[in-house]
Every structure is written in structure tokens, then in C-alpha cells.
Length: 290
Length: 343
Figure 1: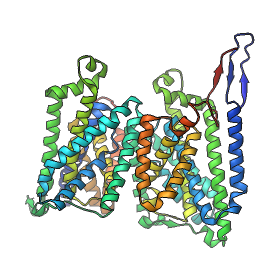
Figure 2 (figure 1 turned 45 degrees about the vertical axis):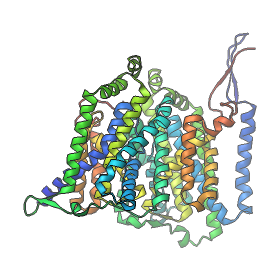
Figure 3 (figure 1 turned 90 degrees about the horizontal axis):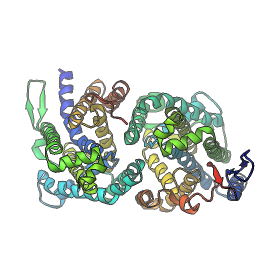
Figure 4 (figure 1 turned 135 degrees about the vertical axis):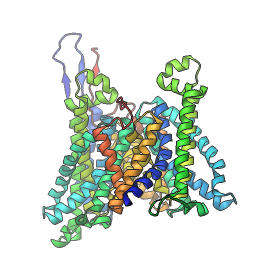
């Protein structure tokens, strides 16, 4: 029963990873930008929520109403101010710029909040669970996270497929010259895409901060886990990212079941195994690594 | 620094040269600085300064080899700390457990890292661009986690270097040895990069940097060249890690596998000037001075450097050396060819 429980908890944990990963997947999908500041932005959102909770009387979940738009604005500004310019200098520049943003962000958080670990209180929700059998129970909060991950990914997919702006983004991705000729403003499309991506990162970051302790450097792990989820699932498909997140979560909890010290390592090893055996990802048919 | 004249004769003869008088002067200045660092500095500065300078030499090695990866190979790695750590642990194990003389242990640590890097490259090269970058970081995390799990490597608390203590080396002799060794390795790494970039392989790498597809179609072995660069750069990171370990006499998984080294390398190369040999040396010196000056103000130097690096990428992609060299007119280490039309 321990193993069934480990898998079940892994699936729930995977929901969190999928939620963290979809912004990374979206930014790569639309702009071919690998945003190394992804993890730091998630943690920054968590700190913002933490600060709001401790300085105002706002309940934890209500902070999302402020945190998500603020972070979306940060995303818009990052794209307009930095990434759009960096894209003109070739493939390496956005990577280097986002790395600079990550280092600045992590160290500003370090200066502002010190290295102590924090978490966002959610009261009874943190411990309440649904009992399935004597040995199995599901944390309500983890379940909510998983459901939100599915809703966000479903929402993003629908948005990309069926709305005018989503179609514009896909057009820009497929052929940005042609999209420009059709009257689509590439820079605005990209800024919107990043704003949406960072909004999901903010949501994921606040949920992360509600479920675990975080520090200014926690973004490193967030970036790595999000990235692993994207690659395990396969690039270019948000549902694949969801599966990737679940596989990563299960790998970690099953690894931890073997030995508590092996959890994260097991996740990395599954990632490397996927890279070795099926580099295009578990769900994607064609090779899209180029 | 040599001038080659094409065998062509007559009025249409093109002059192809590598380097000119500036590179002659620059080369002499470089040699002079090395001589001063080797023969004068150790006898006129405190031991503490020499220990700090070893840190500078390690930064120069790290910058130079990261530039080889990103500036010439087009491979942005944010995981070279895998090999800094492996080199640091390797040198201590080789010197203490195997009893190999320290100088040889440091060099062997580089070899160990090259051996580790070769199979790793087959995994990583399935990724490209930004995903390769994060992939290298995952590898570094795996290296760190595995190191932490091995009891004979001290687990989470790390290892101390005992070789100096057990063979009764005095503090002066120890610091002197490490200083000269670090200087020698830094100079060798720079010169090796210089000759590599002047070779046929270097020419191919320059082509790959500018356009991998075109380079491949012209017969450059893209993957093989990149693999060679990755292995060489990882050996360099290993040497730097070994020097850092013997300089501080101690390694812990969290410090020697720190992703901060990647931040240092990127800032050094980007600010100094990516894709040049001079840039990372200049960048390392600037970084070192800033780090020393601002160390008492916490991590602000990283925030400042991050902002400067972003500004450089966006506004002056050739870095400080690009500005100083007037767009490549001045070269201390000429690796390209200049064609002069007939007069």
C-alpha cells in the first residue's frame, strides 16, 4: 500500500509541477525563448503574496487577485523592455538576458527577505484530506492544485486554438514574416504571450508558497522541475507538459519511498532516461528538438 | 603573430595576415605580465593576496573555457559547476587517498573531468539551445546529489585536503606552490585556447558559431567539433575546480557545485567580450576587482553585474573588449585571417 500511496502522492505533486511548467512551455512554444528567470519569477510571486498577507489583512487566496496581474505586468515589461530586443541579436541573447534577470531577481529577494524560509499560511486547508481507505488519503490542497493545473492547461489550449489573439500567436510562431504582413504586431503578441505565461507562473508560485517552505534561491529547483516536466512530456504541447509533470512527480515520490534522500535524484534520473530513450518526449511523435 | 603571404604573384596578389604590430605588442605585454606575476608578485605581496589571486586565475580559466563553449561552440551551459565540483573532489581524492603528488593530482583532475564529460555529452547533445542549457544544470545537480550520497566523499559535509598537513609542507611553500601552479595552468589554458582557435578545428568552430547549418553543409563536423569543445571546456572547469579546492583546502557539495559559478562565468564572458580570447581575461579581472571591492555589501555585486551583463548583451554584444579593440582592429591573440587587397 505504501507504493500505491507513493504513486498517488506523486500524481498530486505532479499537478504542481505541471502548473509550474506550462508558462515555460508556452514561452518556448510561441517565441522559442527559454526563460531562465522562470523559477525566480515563481518565487517572486510567492514572496509578493507572502508580503501582502503579512502587511495587509488579505486572506491568502485573495492575494492572487493582486499577484497575478502584477506579475503579468512584469512579464509584459520584461518582454517589451528586454526579451524583444534580445531576440534581434540571435538565439543566445534571450538566454543570457533571462539568466541575468534570474540572478538579479534571486539576489534582490535575498537582500529584501533574507535567506530565511517562508511559507504562505492557508489554515486548515494545509492539513485537511479526503480519506479513501485506511492507508490512502488525498490532501485537499494538492487536489485543488492538480485540478487548477488541468483547468489552466485546458484554458490555455482553448485560448491558443480558438481565440483571435491565440491564433495570432500561433501565426507569429509559425511564420512571423507572414504574420506581420497580415497585420499582426509581433512585439505585442510576444508581450501578451509572456504576460500570460508569467501570470500562470505567478499562480503556480503562490500555490507553491502555500504548499511548501521557500527561500530566495528556491527558484533554481522550480526552473529545473518545470524544465524536466516540459522535456519528459515533449515540447510544443501543453497536455504533454501535464503528463510530464505527473511522471516527474511520481518519479520523485516513488524515489523517496525507496530512500528519502533519493526523491529529487530519481526525478533527474527519469528525466535523463527519457532524454536517452525518447528525446522527443513521451507524448510527442516527431522530433522537435531542432 | 606571423605573416603569411599567399604564393600568388603579380598585381592581383592578396595579402593574408594573422595579426599585426598591435598583436606583437599585445603578445609581448601579455608575456611581460606573466613574467611579473610569476617572478615579482609572489615576493612582494602578502600570502593572503596570493591566495586571492589564485581565485582570479581560476576565474580566468573558467571564463576562458566557458567562452570556448558559448562564444565559439555556441553551447550555452549553465552547468559547468558539475565539472568544477568533480575536479575539486577528484584532486582531494587523488592527493589524499591515492597519494599522488599534488601538482599531478590537479592536472589529473582535469583528465577525470574530460573522461566524465565525454559520455555526458551524448546525453546532453540531444538537446539544443536553451534546453541544452537547463539540461547541463540538471547534470550538475545529479553530480551534486550523487556526491552527497557517497560516504567516502564526506556526504553533505564534504572533504578536507590533508596532503599538505601530512607531508609537513609549510604554509609559505603551500601557498607558493598553489599560486605558481594556478598561474601556469591559467596561462596554459589561454595559450591552448589560442592555438586551438588558430587550428583547423578553430576555423570550423568559428563557422559553427556564425551558422551551424551552413558550416555543416560545408563539411565541418559540427557535432564532433562541439563534443571536442565540450570535453575540453569541462577539463578546464575541472582544473579550475581542483585549484579552488587546493586553494581553500576544503570542498562541500553546496559550495563547489554552486550554480553561482555559472553566474560568474557568464558575467565574465559577456561583460569582457564573448567570442574573443582577450574578453574573458579582461572580464575576469573586472569581476575579481568588483567582487573584492563590493564583497562587504552582500550580494549587490551580483545584482550590479547582472544589470551590466544585460545591458552589454542588448547594447554592446561584443563586450568591453569589443569596444576597446575598436571592433577587432586591435588583437592580442589574433585567431582570424585578415585579407588585404593589393595596393
